[in-house]
Length: 71
Length: 567
Image (cartoon, rainbow over the protein chains, first blue to last red):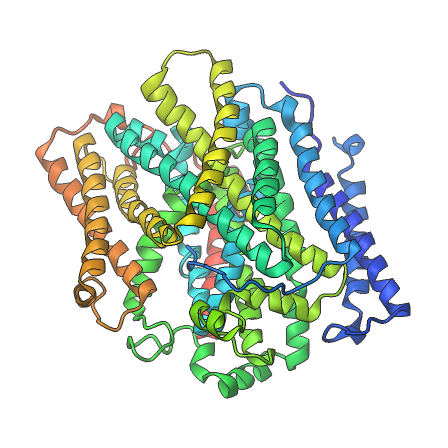
């Protein structure tokens, strides 16, 4: 028998958290330093809210599936 | 299951910023970390080749779908949507959902109860060694070739989209896959496929959302497409009454009988690349639920693949064309539609995520090919034909080395294709030769206890040879298309549908005839392998909403409703 494997959902949480942080950070930077050639619908700041959403989901997954919390 | 791609325009579509590069690099670091972490959990054959048979329905189901959701699949079908309109959705709905549900409810019990390691392994139990050898050798051979072709195509895409060197793309991505699969076996491949599945959605989902906002919703999109292209581009079924009324040049009989009945069933129920993921489920109910979960998500995939292609018809200021005219005019080809839409809406960060999604798609497809090849080579060729009585540790070691060798052969194939581009068309056609007859052999084996070993072998061989024969006939004499595809106006895809149908019919007829001329196995020998002589566990003890049949019905109803809505 193996000891318990860290669930894949925890790794997914890490991925969402780190990527979300990077994307939201890039989006926030663009709010204050608008690019010379913005993408279409730039005014919606998709990077900011999409990154924030991924970041929050990442936190949720990391906490919910943290290795120490497995029953 | 994807249109051929050959991108050859050598201009860079997007430029990555520092944050994009960090996101791509973090992805590579994470998949390797997962491989190293799982290394200690792949010490036995059951662990390495079958992931310990302990995957939950969700993990097996998402992995089942992810192994198919390669980046060329994403980009190829987005291109097909731009070219043929919403008809491309058939490959995701009727060309997948019924087959996946059929696998779950009808076929999975036999695969699972027989405790086979592979589809060729099932053929050995049901029909004998010759059928296994035929299917194992053809599968192993074609899998590494396909893997190499996909590798080359992906490297070419990276060159066009990002300006990356082809050698760099081939070696970095293939060595990463080799390391994490060789270390952690199927479990590592499955874990990474689930991660890749999530990244694909996270990276691709914004395109249709922002696209629909830009055009003002679905109704406006239809009006815009009717203006820019044709109203036929937004109808799934109403234009299929004639070969000439739709952009694909196909008739509904080709879609229903060729695609849905033969090609789709053949691929989703007998291609070991996808079936292996479900065999790793922890119990029969999970194994049955996994394809149903996969089917539910498969129905949603057109949202991130087909819709961007349709949106491009409405919003892109340039007209895309085929490869040849794109090269001649210096414009963009159909195959660039997804990267173009990505560049249209995604700034720094999101662009990196989108590119990561494409790389993740490529790596999940390649890991699927390599892990399936490794299992078939080790269990169905090496152990069956070369070294029958080695200890378990020897086969695990063989599996690890085979992973490396499989990747290296794929890399070699990629370079071969680079030198002889026409190979690509031939190998993709060759791969399709085996799928339809194999479905005929497996389905008769599971559902008809009178089918005999010689019947299964000769049926499979005859079906495969007839498929090759029809393909060669049309190549040598293009007018033969009117007989093979029932119309001189049929295009490549329509020809594939009908060729698959005929080869399946040949396989079934030969199997039935030879079976009636040979001695059948006893019921005792067929127990656990065939319908009617296998005790399939009942599910009376679980609530109705936990039963696979209930969820299969839910997915089936949603599937019908979607087809009616987009009729």
